[in-house]
Amino acid sequence: MKSERVAAIAGVAESDLGETPGKTVLQLQAQAAKAALEDAGLTKDDVDAVFTAGNWAWSTTMMLAEYLGIRPRYTDGTNIGGSSFEAHVGHAVAGIRAGLFECALITYGSTQRSDRSRRRPMTGPQLTAQYELPYGLPTPVGAYALAAMRHMHQYGTTSEQLAEIAVATRKWAMMNEKAMMREPITIEDVLTSRWIAEPLHLLDCCLVTDGGGAVVVTSAEKARQIAKRPVWVLGHGETHTHNTIVNMPDLTVTGAVESGRRAFEMAGVRHEELDVVEIYDSFTITVLLTLEALGFCKPGEGGPFVSGQRTAPGGDFPMNTNGGGLSYCHPGMYGIFLLIEAVRQLRGECGSRQVKDAKLALVHGTGGVLSSTATVILGRD
Amino acid sequence: MPQPWPRPEVDSDSRPFWEGLKQGELRIQHCADCGRHIFYPRLLCPHCFSDRIEWVAASGRGSIYSYTVVHRAMGPFADEAPYIVAIVELEEGVRMMTRVVSPRDAVAIGRPVRVVFTQVDDALVLPFFEVTGEG
Image 1: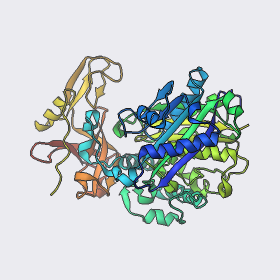
Image 2: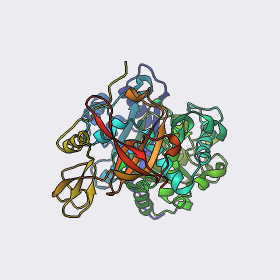
Image 3: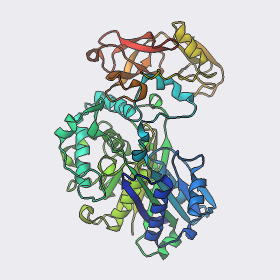
Image 4: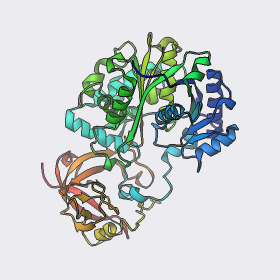
């Protein structure tokens, strides 16, 4: 590790998760923000930068900051889908490095399960969506199915290999009392669950839940003053390669190639030094493509890489240790929960699912239809 | 009552494309400077940023780049499933989303396809594709 200590994650928290009838997205974010600031040993008056992403307001940061009683000197509502929060961490570090602010509050909240909004059609002008909407591809699952089918064609990847990811992730969820799905599943269960969009089965797909989260990023100086062990942001990178799935240059290669390379370079760490990885798992194929693009294995070798329950508890590649979007929670844009789990692992707070002596973690978000990626590498002293 | 087929919101970028379909022509764009074809239509070439863009009729032939069989469909498509949505790569080098109307067993990545102009309701013609060989 050669990177400088510019900023650290000082506090993390979830709001209520699962099904939260009657709650609003503002309440969930307020809950999480209060708990994350308490976790950091800070108050809302310490916050001088706000970051959030969602489509619940014309200006999400203005509505949320007003609701919380915060007047920020820096505001960032970047919305690139599920990876927004990894991008926010990168932006927060850049802002702190530039001396623009000292304490960033990053939040997310969604009531999509209670609202039944997943199946509600999008509104707003179609613009470039007009060339895809008339064909009835279900979004986002259909786009990921197209990528999975292409990967299978090109490399011989199998449904069994994708199922390995779902099964291993469920084993982690069984050790997380906050996880929604905690019954064990087998590869056979995944393969016999009903088709959603071939080649993806129901159990290849993430949950649809409510939930919120918050992450507090502070300057190194502030981080050193607080009680808990600071978790340093060692490297970060982001990109987006396309908007709609037809425009993805290669359906088997995500932007993680770029965002990951930059994050590794900035952090000055090697793949084999990482103790735990938290990788966006909207679908099993999302994980497989990301492992390849980040360079954990060669293109096309993601299937063999995850085989034999390698990513499960006790395997040599601990991944998605909270049970992931596949089994723990997935309120639409899941990226903030990857950060929360990585920080808890690095602080040694994870109880029975704790990865022993975890010092270095990689967090990787994917947004849209494999459209955006953002990678963050975290470490403790 | 079945919901209406989702209607593209035609704009000044897309009008020649949608109008062409009604006349049995699959129109894409071509850059007069770098010589590459462009789809979807736009004001500038995304490869070289030239604004010397012209419309051309595509051959209507290509191959399947990827596809999925949709089993759980939403909204107006809910009762139609299963159906096949694909990304087709045209001979001209551009890709577009489409439906493949051939039987499931005939559909595979790499197979050659040709356009089938399909009147889906009173006012809308869509460029679906059918498989023409083993590839």
